[in-house]
Length: 140
Image (tube, rainbow, N blue to C red; front, side, top):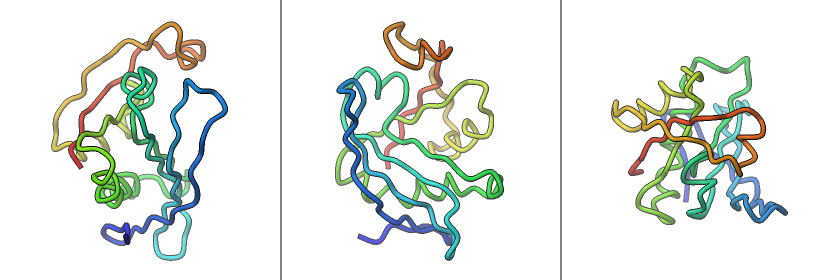
């Protein structure tokens, strides 16, 4: 299955199975714009509280010098056909203060606003200082 959208292609890298059973296994892809590696995107598998309330099914990161070019949005769109083979609904989250990621996700989900949810005290992100997340539902 070719995964691409508007000049961005996803290159499958590996499946990661974390040693910590509280974390979800995920498919890891490199995001390519032409021949440039501009970042990564992950699709997590599972319905744990950690996935559904804190990290979401999709996580991405764009290298600093390539930010502001909508690569995260395009990577999510490129990931959609693969995500549909696994689930009909995907949770995508971000920190409330991360305005760039929030705009990306709002564009992805058609302008819908996210629901603010509390990070459980038992979650590793809580220990790192996260208290709330914005959670969005995406039908890829």
